[in-house]
Image (cartoon, rainbow, N blue to C red):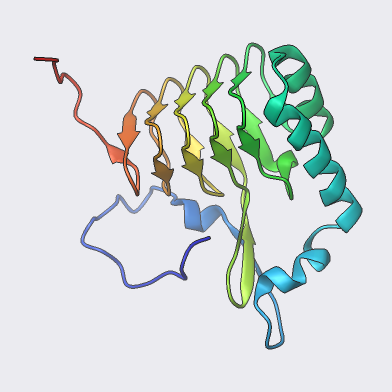
Amino acid sequence: MTAPDGPADDRSEPEDTERRHDRLVRHPTTGPLNSLYHWTDARHPLRVMANYAVILVCRILPSMRLKNVLLRRLGMTVGDGVAWGLESTPDVFWPDRITVEDHVIIGYDATVLCHEFLQSEYRTGEVRIGERAMVGAGAIILPGVEIGAGAQVAANSLVTEDVPPGTTVAGVPAEPVESGATDA
């Protein structure tokens, strides 16, 4: 979950660059309760239960092929040769909004989210992970994020913005790391 958009920070972006927040669909909720109390209006409970059951099995399933077949049945776009680490978790509400291209590695306990529940609204967005990208163990990908081909997300990173192709990001929030570092 993220906080509502606050004041702009000092990082400037080109005007023609679409940001993750621009790709999110906002769904206002009414009443005194926060938006998570309205989840049954967002997605049918039986659909979420079925998604959860399949994803729970996939989290512990050692077979990559069977895991990919089951996730495709939930509506995910999963390319050839995708490897999901044990305990990795695609979004249980909207797995059909996830696209994982060929030969991607998603590490142990990584989470790919297509929704975020806030106080007076929930937001949904597509997530795309490009060909041969790698998502490290424990990383979290937020809704609306696009990870480019060959990009790398370090373990335990929180990806709040797009990752350009071939870029390595790390941290909370994930930011590009300098290349060319050598081991001494």
